[in-house]
Length: 408
Image (cartoon, rainbow, N blue to C red):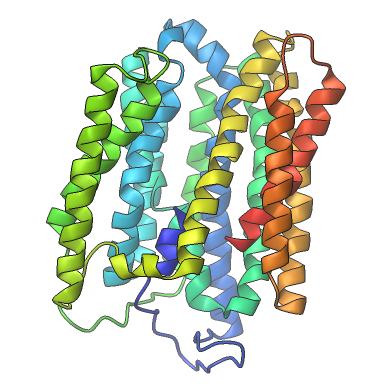
């Protein structure tokens, strides 16, 4: 998702006193503008990443309180459905109207969704409000990373993306632990309410400290409404198919096959329509020609794979720890510490290595190999597995994810 937002940006934000860097033609902000902007970016990253990890350890208590075990995955699925669909749309809107206003819209929607999720009285309400929260979350991480692409040359981006990876890793360590402690000592509702003070601080920083940056687009902004509708129509049934298959319906059932078929039809129409807009020099949501670039295409695929490993682990490891190993919510949050510790370490190290040596390909291979190894170790866990086996698997996976996250 982040890769789409970064690579699709066609307009850089206007800056004062900018000069081209020898390692690229990306304009530079003044030091003050850069620090203020990155302060807002890192706060947004903290807000988004904390929410993605703090809820996991509270989920067993949530489903017990709201009586919704059969809809356990839907709390996360609803959030991911809306956030996934909206990422490229927000990315295009930020190209047209600038990063800052889209940041503000995203944070406000996210905070409203957080407050409503915490006040939910039924599982259906929680699922609906998490979907609304996802509408705001879609604007946070991708545009934060797009801003880094606007500010820094490719050589410099590794250092800053490594730092954002470290922020994500740190909040991912604190999130599960805080979520477990909050659940054991207060109420699961506070895992959503805790977003409010952090989000308000981030909102104030964006409003008052982040410079008012405008897109270089001087023409009248043109929003691709038809493309957005086709993208939503193609993405939602695809995600629903993968969510329902194997749990509520058989993989070869007519319900699942119909969802996949519908997705293929609308995605095909989306690609054809976007290609037509591109040929007419209009403004599609995603330029199909981007996928002719091998680096972009590979980056999208690897980002998808690493995200599956990351969020799948965050979602199900606390459930495994509490339901299979029989530990408390607080301690199940601590269980994720080895995973995030490895992620923080390798994210910072790989970012520094790219900035120092300017080479990334070998790190990409190493990161993916380690990620695959860690995933295979987690795959072997069962009711007879030991804590040592779990910890070793998470460390290996975390190291691999950290290398990958700072590069893509």
